Image 1 (tube, rainbow, N blue to C red):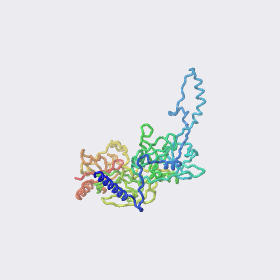
Image 2: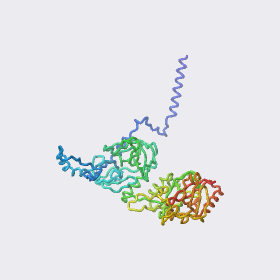
Image 3: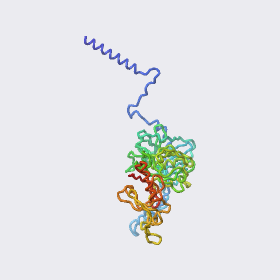
Image 4: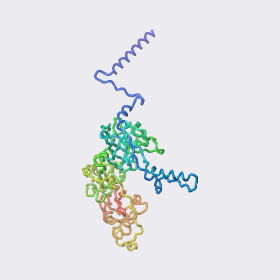
Amino acid sequence: MKSMLLRHRQRLICASLATVLAAAAPGPGFAAAKPQPESLADVSVADLSERLLDAVVNISISQKDDAASDESDPDSAPRPKVPEGQPFSDLFKDYFDNHDGERQKNPISSLGSGFIIDPSGIIVTNNHVIDGADSIEVTLADGTSMPATLLGVDKETDLAVLKVAPEEPLKAVSFGDSRKVRIGQWVLAIGNPFGLGGSVTLGIVSARGRTLDGPYDNFIQTDAAINKGNSGGPLFDMDGNVIGINTAILSPSGGSIGIGFAVPSELAEKVVHQLIDYGHTRRGWLGLRVMAVSEDLAKSLGDDDPDGVMVSSLIEGGPAENGPLKPGDIILSYDGQNVDSVKDLPRFVAESIPGENVPIVIMRDGKRMTVRMAPALVAGDEADVPPPEDKAGDEAQSVPDDGATEEGAPPEASETVPTSAAYGMTLGLLDDNGRAVHAIDPSVEGVLITAVEPGSEASKEGILPGMVISEIGQQAVNTPTDVTERLTQLVSEGRRSVSVMVTSPDGTLKVVSLVLE
């Protein structure tokens, strides 16, 4: 009896499982689920690599070693000095006399990588791969070699564009959009490490927005193996688009330790097209100096969110001098791109088209608004370094501290100059005596700070005697009374802090935030 019940129960369980499986099976109107790879062993980049390899090239250059036999060059190898009469002295003399000419003619060569972006023979690589080359040779994946001409270079982004003349159209690849790249996604690097052409390495995007030492740095960081010779080669996404140009590695040994850097396509593509069209870059600039926005500074300007960068001054003669931007404005975005750091703005401006109006979202007096302005073309035929805009003020120049006049004697302070005290600062009129004592540039205007109390709010913000207050809360001041009245007004309005623009004797501007009492 028990065995019959057990068999009956087993039949019921099997019938129930069959019903569940039947219900879970896709109906005629639904496609079966796509099988997912079970492990990395089921994932292959072989097809992708095969499709891309023909578009990656090896680049070799040669330079004349003019210093090889130059004894005056400290970097050249010196001839051994063998005293006369010593054994084999004649043999040494004959050898070097006969081979000095050959040593001078021996070329210096180096290797790098590149990739084809146009079937007609347009090739992208790094500037440092071909820098100083007397001749450039490109070797295709099938072993075909041909000479290349240089179309243009951009030292600031370390990019160069070459041109070869193939008999037939070449296999080319396209740029992708590096702005869509996500940390952790797979990437593929192809290049010529240590002369081993056609080497493929796989990795992920480790980080974005890395900066090294360039003004427009915005590198993609990857752990795909990049070694000497990979420079100038492409970094691909899994769709076969170029999202970066492998440029540098961080390594104590010279070999890959999994920290490589690639110029993002969002920057490289624009530079490459300019090099093709003009032979050099065409960058814009606004003529601004900006500084980071701290939380206290944001509140003093009527903004509770310390996003963006603040305009600290306008460069005289620059495009912004008579434009809509003013010192104290907080720039939140430029041409639809959020400005999160001081390094963002110069890159965005440089990438924009000179002469074309772009929208700039700013915060002024606590109100969000949009202004439009056109960047100007940086002066110079190959101007690719903007003036010192978009950064905090220039480094201060050294200023004489002896207060000597043209006659050599320090002037006496005026006894009739009105003074007042505010937040640890003793203020006075900026007259001729004050300018002479502190060697203040004639272009500087405002209220002179004659003394600063140690430990005061002003002292904590780095304000020093000899500086000049130019603005309080984005309003110009000319006398000590102007300063005290403006501070009193802001306190009465309920403001808890205020932005103060001070100018160093050499004209360098600085904006600080003072807590109002």
